[in-house]
Amino acid sequence: MKCSQEQFDAIKDKLTNCDLITNFDKSSYLVNCYRESSITNLPYEYANAWADKCYDEWNEEIFLNACGIETEMIIKGSELQYKSIFSGDWVNCRNDSEYRLKSTKKQELENQILELQNQLKNL
Image 1 (cartoon, helix red, strand yellow):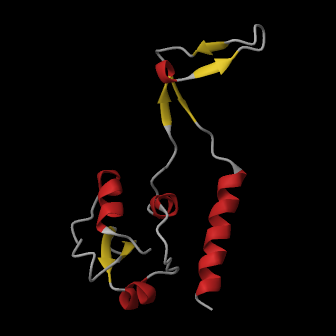
Image 2 (cartoon, helix red, strand yellow):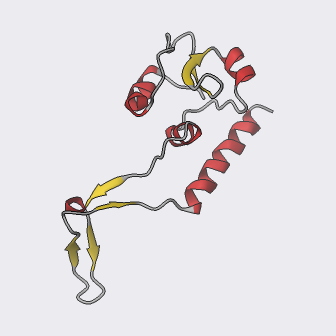
């Protein structure tokens, strides 16, 4: 997947085994190498030959999912409120709990649309 240095820097703390990273100006495609269980960046020609799918636009969620890294957002109770069905008021969630946003089919469809758009560009 095409990736810039800035985009890689934004996710590198979530990745393990990515010690094969070189200059993104020359090797702008980030690849998840399952056979070596590592992540590296390659020029387009090599990335296209190596990867099952080669994306020309960066999508953090698709890449992290391909690496087996969950992209769900964990929210602390102190940062979240819900609307009471009884009073209609916004109420703080419990501070000692964590919550997450549940994945939806909408996100899956958006990812599929992006993938199809990329494939159309390559035709």
